[in-house]
Image 1: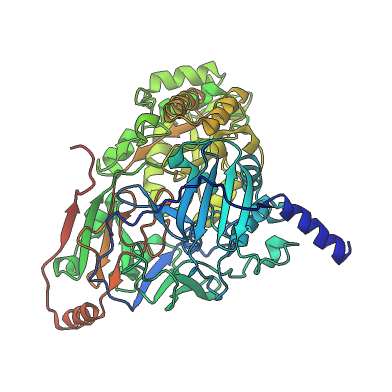
Image 2: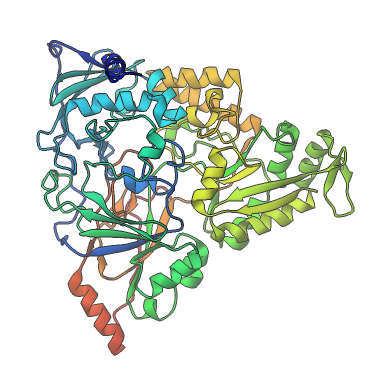
Length: 605
């Protein structure tokens, strides 16, 4: 293909995504928000390095395409800002890249004014064309990202560019105003960086793209570590909602492939913060001299956020699991209460519904199927698995009722060992398939699993299309991990996505939850309405040490919470306290132990 023809094709694609418009509508009403309270501390200090860890090295530096949907995607996206975001306490819109926004009368279009100071990390200005290019980028087959291709074709109509700093995005359908930005407020994509999209996956696999956020990747040592460095002249550093945030000079992620080894690194001060929500860590490991002498603080922080979809995801493309009777038998044979009581110290609570914690969107009448061996046996017998082998495992047509559970963290092994033994009482053999976190998720994305033990983090409202619509079934690189393929459910999901009224959407959401429950391909396990962390005393936090939906304020980057909330970078490293602590440790000096339980955002008793 000649270069001229390529340029012509690119121009034609671009013409369908960034339409020329003479002027903005006459009745446009620009909005902004500079009234909500700040949530960073005026006492924050700049400087220092946060030492963090990751269990496996990422398979790519891309955030779209094959192998990109792993754990490291969060810090990558956390440095790519949206035009607007959600205040983590008030849940109202706040400006980010855009200073102002507006809505069309039909609630299909949002208009944005870009902050003229906004810059990419390579110094190039952020323009309306970068947002227009995002639509072209996400629709491109070159990125090999079916979810993005489908979503941005089905849900986004067009991007209109009015001038360098003004653009609009139009949805294919009207939506409630408090939800519209979640669809049309996508991040910009640097057109000047992605000049050649051919062979995208290979070409950009390890290239570090420019970012709009406070940090950029400055060092990548494959298999070892990745370093983010703060942009000293970051364009947004003095804006109201970003002042006194993103304080450390560097964030270093070191690969520590074993969580127990990571804990040893933490105890030596080589990792600054450690997630200790797990009862094993909070009750047993987070004890001893470094805690008793006050070198390390403990924080139990309650949140008020929607819960993730923690559960068992049964792959219905597996012939055994295609039978609903088998799926319901598994549900009744899963003794999750025993796991909560014995392994998790009673700290967690049973999850009841796929969409818990969403207010009127949640069907609170749906209750998870209880552990009941009699019911489990009835369902397995009905499915034809009514013969038992000498080893106590059910047999049908000479085949054993044997399935594997894929998971990505060794800390979950004790929980699954208990379930494995309980399942055996019902004649089900469960093999535990532990992979590292990246490999585990890759396996599930490629649908190479029987059952996945895991969760997807949702948003401010329940999401169903990616997980349960048939367009995402039977194909790799999608989140339909159950391979649900139900045309009636598809219609409800499509109606839910199209509904403008909150009441209508909530009603459809509850109906969808009922079908998910009846199918039994996703089985709820547990949920946790809080987070617990331990951190060295030189890691300083605001007086309220976290936010309503974001949790403890120790996330280095933005958008680490449950949805498009701006809540990252609230902590800082106090170099004086670090030096004081190091000297005290050498001298055997102690400080008062700190164990803080923060109930600022706790819901209920």
